[in-house]
Length: 264
Image 1: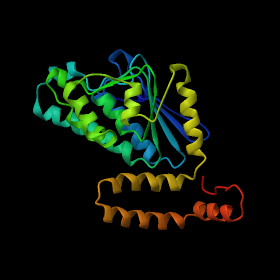
Image 2: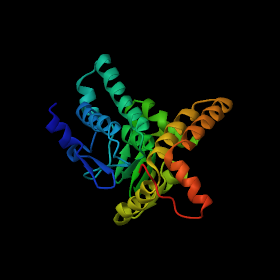
Image 3: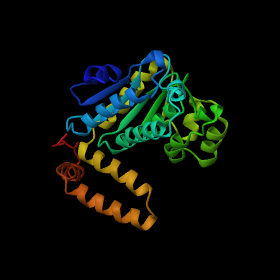
């Protein structure tokens, strides 16, 4: 696949604040996570991992759906174990790349987010959805348990709610998704961009380094036992305190003034 094709599938825009918008742009296929879409998304994420000016990423989509997951027609056309293993490994790399980015990733969700599309929402650090959005891990409807989507799903939602979605394949509403912990905010469709902008403004007003260190810590300590988690968290906070912006923040608190961030 050419670079032009990759850029067309996931165009990237960045404003002066360092707010990046990635858009899944394959509406005819409901932004399905086929091999080409995954490669394009991986390329964009790899570029962002090296971009020190990027502060927040908004992951959006064009068309009627946010993302309908993997394309079952493509999968049915190639009944080969090696192909399936490669496809799911490729998807897992994309999901892990989102987690490893030093900046927060916000899913902007409209329409449906099903199977690996629901996985994508769960994998993002934050998620804001239109009240018309719907979510499902629908693979079981076709004899395929959504095993890889289950990984971030059970880390976002209560276990029994996640298991119900995985076992039934039934849709839940945006309101239910927020109640279960899959979403941060739900708003009317016309207010979706404004609500995300409010969230973005708060994030970009904070020091980049503190957010990067904090995001990495949260995901690492979640997989640890309590004692190891506290040890890592303490080390992270000590290192964070040595950063120029943390020193400025402490001085600003002591002097009862607003901090003037040094490094952005």
